[in-house]
Image (cartoon, rainbow over all chains, first blue to last red; front, top):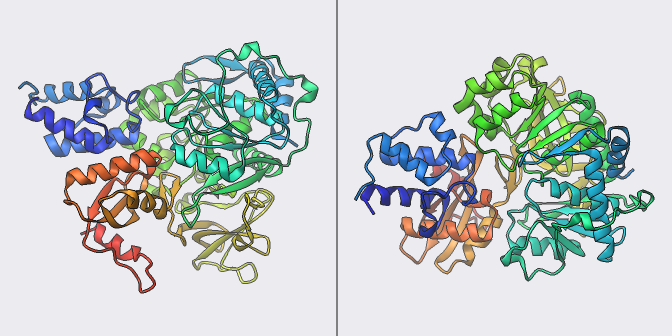
Length: 82
Length: 486
């Protein structure tokens, strides 16, 4: 796992209180009971604080999985490769 | 009159009109829901349920939930609604406290298996016969609902609501919000709380249609739905509207201009957000009301007509009386406890002496407010220590009791911290024997998650050396709140 991936995982563990085994690219609000709109706002705030990446409203709206978050960060130049 | 009789009357008048549209988009007419609720009533009867029995329903927002709800009312039962996200311990507490014979759930859940009296909503409901029409609501059971709310002591109390209480509230809202049978409502509210539930009561009384969503999620899709489905009513919480206004204001204006009205409740809303809604949707009536489970919809305001009263929650609703201070010497333009009287007010709490909560027939709300010379009420906060997370109430003691169960917690206290989005959030202060680091913070919050509803989980844990207390041992919460800013 790359350092950025570890940062993102820890951030989501803190905001959503998920277990490490729930950190999966295809997991989203349907799989994670603590993930609702309020949590999405908190995720965006934590991502900005941790990575300096400001999510657009469209990105926040279409954030349907952990994989989506990684894609946005990747498009912002944040590398997830080891 | 049983509130389900309103539903029967509407079904006779408008059998083929859509009543509920589920989160999956499947639409059910009044006649279809009547049929399904009658079948569910037969299921209850076949399990030995009799009029006056208490039945717990614990469902997410869904069409099946309403079939079970109306079916239970058809059997003249008293319904207790428990949030689907409640933990087994809370469900068991409510079941034992109210002496419910059965609890109904949409599916088996492993953690809840040991709680007696479970009935799973059947997938084959069609195989049950429809209860004969003449058997529906046959017995006059005065009590319609028992709604459990957080008590000042941290022990949930069951608020008893009669059919008469609810019928008064239905009539009151219809009169001041000018709702009619052509209304189409989109609801993202939890329908296990009275705010959202009472709206469904209204629509089944008038013949409106309710589009049910499980929660406020994927807001752009919801906004498109408002426009595509020609929605006229969109109730919500201040926190939900803040997200919409902060992030999707343009889409909101584009899609929601056809809304006839918006209703907000549960927590105060900042005047700048109220002004923004009035500005974005000039043709939409924007209502706010104030009430408690014990006295739902006690005051209301239409902000379109009262631009100078944006900080208030309005005047008493028809039939409701509000005073501040004491009934004999009511205060004007001076803060005191808000007292409420009227046909919508509960007669008391289930199974306990409710005398201390009333004064000469007035409900002592525990809320702190001001009534101005025009009769408009401004809500200032709570006399008690309740925390309000976007309309969901809890007491610090509920969180503290859970935190204290953890082996590394020596002492603790919880307070409400200001939150831009939700009004307040929960912060736990903990004295620990362990290492006071991030890892322990997450562990404690996770432990709370395993024991409490999501909104009650502390957003932060702050480790301190000692919980400040008075000589008599009471937590000095003000002193803790002062530390939040530092």
